[in-house]
Length: 618
Image 1: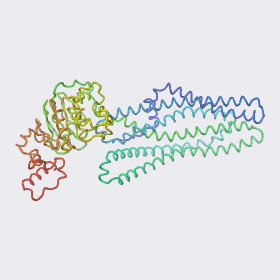
Image 2: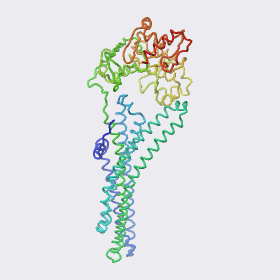
Image 3: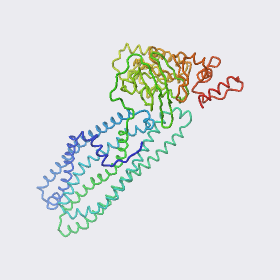
Image 4: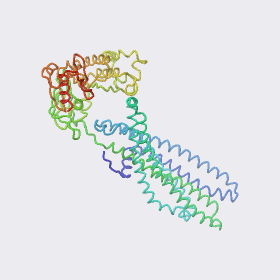
């Protein structure tokens, strides 16, 4: 995604309009309490003059009680106002942050698979979690700075000016000199913060890859290699964060230096006035209390500028994701979904990913109520056909129809409600087995659920689970075996009871025993449905009503198993190669890893292997 720099003003307006203006009433109430809290600080510094001049210097014991009572009232008001404004700000910040996260998920979940290929899960998690958290922290600082700190500064500077405006001018005369350095530091902080955010997203992606690939990492002894890669990324992240912190800290550091020069000037000038009797000790203490209390909010306000630059970098990325166009849009006026068993048709469909042609003028028909199998090498475009049918992607040209209705004319929910999909990757959620099968449905009776469990052979392993249907299956179904996960997915599909079934290598990752059980469940599932099957194991699709042979995005041949064998060609060669002497010689997906046939094999077998290799993998 091309990054466009957004000004701070634009970001603040976007933040206000999108997330903060809904809480205008609460914000106003919080500001009132901030003003009270800030005003009490001014009152505190003001009370230093009567305390010193009337009580300590003049020795007026009658004033002692009233001065001490005034301090009690001031601190009580400050405490109550502080609690109220913090609670209100916490509600605003947490609620608005939750609103932003919901908006981001709503936007990201509607993006097409191509978007998610470019933006890996770790990157998106970093945006939704860490970046929103960074913005959330700044909201409170900004609002507090605009309310309490500004009120406190105005109050205490008012007290300081009332004591002596010349002392105040001497104290603050160096601050204008900081404008240019602070502006330069703000740009530096924003740049380094943006780098740190990018590196943080990279770290999240790296962790996601490591934890999801822990088994291959261990099998290939890559623990140290992955640890070193992560350490390198982490070192870069730390350097960027430290540099950003240096910029933020430098702003407050320069203010402290200027404050020191101001204090030095006031002590030299004001001290002389006290010595000569022009000013009292009480005035001096009131002034220095006010100035001392002014520099704390001043430093916080200065640090906000650095903190804001870090948040602005995060906000830019969030805004980019929220503004990213959604390429697959539902129809403006959707039509009703077809009834009954629909025919699935692709007419002269061409699809490109960038400069790569995936499907080239492809046409095929899957007859209603029958099973159509798709056979071909990896990259032939078989899975892409499934993506076209379910509108996970749109073609550049051609027409895809279900029951005579173009898929682009159907609402997403209606279109995808026509399909049940069982793939080799059986994705389960970290919930109970029951929840993974029902997927939020509340209209399923226990009798219907039992029928589905029996038909999908889930009942076979259910008694072995400690809590039956209430057993937590773990992240991605890690508590279940591959065959068990597949049966759960088949149970989902049976429960959906859709007219079209898509099977994508549903048994390829299973052992022979699990495959047999799962295949029985699939046979029951496909009965009376329009079924499309992707398979590399030709034994699983011999009984298909039609087999479509694909190569490089084109249909090369089609027919029944017997017709294709009789005609010869790619399918016949593949079949003979997989079933030499009545047994599987080599699985289709492992052709690219197969070693050359032994020299003692017959010349016919060697020629067959070379012919298939040239046709499929050229």
